[in-house]
Length: 410
Image (cartoon, rainbow, N blue to C red; front, side):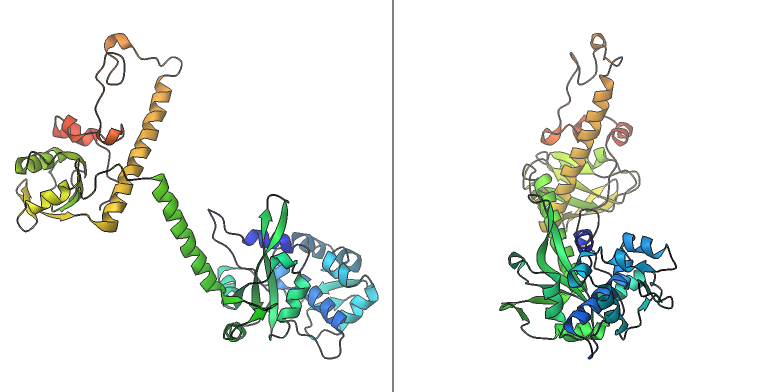
């Protein structure tokens, strides 16, 4: 892992607009040849990570160096990388080590002062197909102790016994107090193929420092996080668009309208059935075949349906089927009502702001309209200026012109 691992990990954290991404990784699984020392094995593994698919896909600095001289990177440059430098600052030790690698990924220059990725091993294009292939062989492992100061070399040592591990990414978060990226205690481990990843996940009770680790495929982890975010977003939405002030058991879905049926006709038909069934709003647009009637009083939706025979009512010579909204369906509809009210209030506020700008003062001498001095203020339902009351509509044409268009059919 390079000293850029912090930046890599930071890019993986989920945000509001993007879903959490997995680390891309090399296809070559680094294995330590039998004739090398532990130090040489660490140097080989580190250099092959630097020049591997995973790092070159995102390491802009190293890519810039590679572009300068037919891919050759001076050892002096590579020794500015903290992890390699911590292993050895002796160029001969480094070159002698990489020379023993069986992977054939890295070439050594004739003067033994430069290294490059083999020209016959080009970096694969990171497209969607490649990304999915990498995801399929990557696992999520959680349970490493961040408070113990776990380092990458410890993780490399821990995963060394498992066959064909090609990449490990320490997942980190940005700590605002220290302004540093700190280890979260979980990693993404990529294997050379999905079969090896599957074998790893079959192991029972994998532990690190006597603590049991949680292991799952990266795809399963992403699905879990996606479900958690969805649940969290839903909770936020419920808090933002509270429906506690709206009457319950008061919404009825009506289906079977003719093309010429108006809201006023629907309301009049309901009041003929029972004058106590005051309508708060009808979510319907002329020419639609269905809509939802929201009554002003709690329980009146159920009361209306119970007054019908076989849930049928005739409106404009059409047989209409009524169905009481209940449970989640009612909740979602009422939340839509609150959202629509909020949107209309915001839009109305914007219009009023422009109306009272310099040069836009209203002439109160002429009455000023419904909201000005001397004018009549329109009474609205649910204390919301956003949703016009149906009883203010005097003609069918005026109703269709004034009432907001329906956003969707319930």
